[in-house]
Image 1 (cartoon, protein in one colour):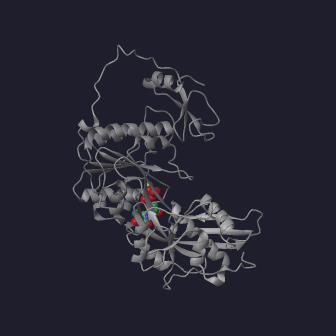
Image 2 (cartoon, rainbow, N blue to C red):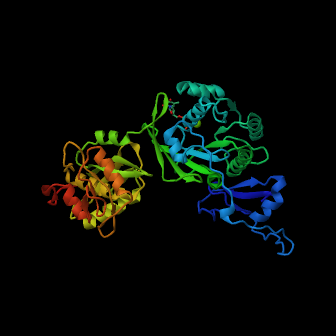
Image 3 (cartoon, helix red, strand yellow):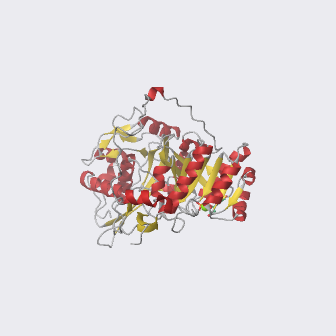
Length: 474
Ligand code: TYD
Ligand code: MG
């Protein structure tokens, strides 16, 4: 290995002096790439990377400081800038905080540039100083997009540049209150070797932007790409560095987009915001439950889930299809939920579902409608009921047809239905949209149809005649 180089994992940033097939940090294979150590830092980084012992100063000759009690530390109230987009402000915890770095990740074409253009447009309209740094698109391309958005979007100053030093000098000179860098992978730090986008470059870019942001109290939104498996490409190290990590998710061919906080030093990470991509940019979706309930088919295999999106309840339709399989290993296909969760629910349904599970060999498809993603345990019961209803070809009816039936609850391995968080909010949301008799775990609330086990839930959801084991169910 040439002198002055180091191996850095492009996924997690782990550093090691020699090349290894598997990264000891994140256990990914073939992710270590060679990078030069910047001359000024070679000595220091080399020592640390090599695992060498740093010289330790004795207790008698180091400086001595007096620690303070936390109660005596003055903390000024955090000032926040509203972005003019309610869903984004909620996910951020009330707006952008000056001097902080927000990393906005998402796959290409999901709407990151559109969202950040809109944010700066709103802030410029409100009289804030803004700056949009585009390393990906030319100024003309950004203008074309801005024309489709609000009139304020055209009042944003743009810098189409990829050289980090130029960008930092311009930022220092312009002194914006809010700056967007689109994207962090396209900027090029001259002192750091390697192509833009590699771990070392991205880390260098982010840490130098952060220095300036803290010194000048600029709120910076760094746009980052994600790989196909959903991780922020290369700069997982950035997640430690920045104050807030937002993930923009959704399927490109569907209109719905979800914004989630994965990390937030100034707010909760439970919140999620819902958007729809339209002709004039992203529009906040505030009546999602009403839409999904109205669109629910009430056909065999369909049930409504009263889910929690952070602190907000949301009614979504869960659909299942059970079809005879010609494969030795039948298909298990999911959209909008974890595949392992389906496997678990099918196993519980098979063992405790009194023959309601699909009779093998059957392919099972489960879909959360509208391109939504549900990552909470409350989805278990909805998956079980949808699969049971699909495999018997019998619809789950609400007490007031044609309105659908709602449910929620986590399934235990012994077939019991377990309590999940915020049952009162879920039930209130279902009631608000006219859904009565929501099937829920014990202790959820008086308005619910409370059941203790999967068996009882199946008995409550499906009519008596559906309970006979069907001979050719699959
Ligand atoms: P973009 O913000 O460029 O995505 P990203 O920066 O995440 O790669 O937008 C992506 C898509 O959004 C693009 O295919 C066009 C579409 N779009 C609309 O449908 N309506 C609009 O008003 C705008 C600006 C974009
Ligand atoms: Mg973009």
